[in-house]
Image (cartoon, rainbow, N blue to C red; front, side, top):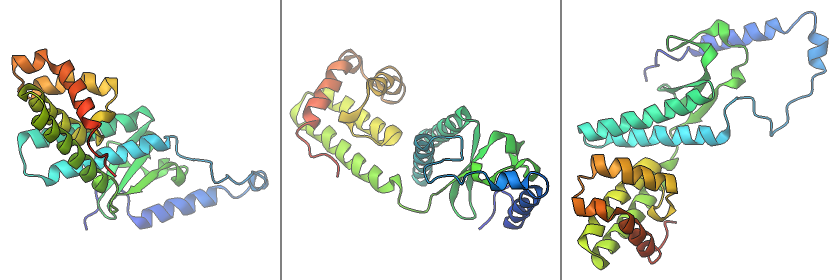
Length: 232
C-alpha cells in the first residue's frame, strides 16, 4: 500500500523518538525523573475526544459517499465532509490526514506541519498526535441502521399524510442520514434550520407548496416517527 506524502516513514519516526530520548539526558534529567507519571485519564493531545470522534465520523461519511456511483452531487458531499473535518481539526490547532499505509485517520499538531508535510525536527512529543483506525466497522453499521429507520419514517409519512409532507420527509431523511447519521426525530433546532433554510432549497427541488408547509412537514415527520421502531 502506498504511503501518503504527508506521513514520515517508520524509520524516520524511530529516529525522531531516539533524538527526543537523547535530548532528555544530561543536566536536568534528575528533575525529569521526579516528574509524576501521567494517569490513565490524562490526555496528551490538545484536541478533545468528542472532536476526534466527530472527525472520524466525517471521514467515514466522505468515504461512503466516494464509494457510491460518482455524480457531481456525491463528489460535492464528500468534499463537504472533508472540509468540515479539516475545519474542526483546525479549531484545535490540528491538521487531519488519512494515512493509507495502515488506514488510519491522523491528527497532527499544526506546528509540526510545513506545506502539508510533517517536519521531524518539530516533533517534540509524538504522543500529541492522534491516530484512529478506519479499518473497523465504526459508523458504517450505525449509518445503515439510521438510514433504514429514516427511510421507514419517510415511507410511513407517505402512507399516512399528504404528498407535500411525503416529499419533504424523503428529503429530510436523506439529509439526516447523510449529513449527521442521526434519526429524523433526533434533529436539533439548528439541524432543522439548516435543512429548512439551506439543504431543502438547494438540493430538494421543492415546490412552492413544500416551502410554505415545511415547518408543518417537520412536525408531521416527528409525530409519525413516534410510531416507528427506533434504530437498534
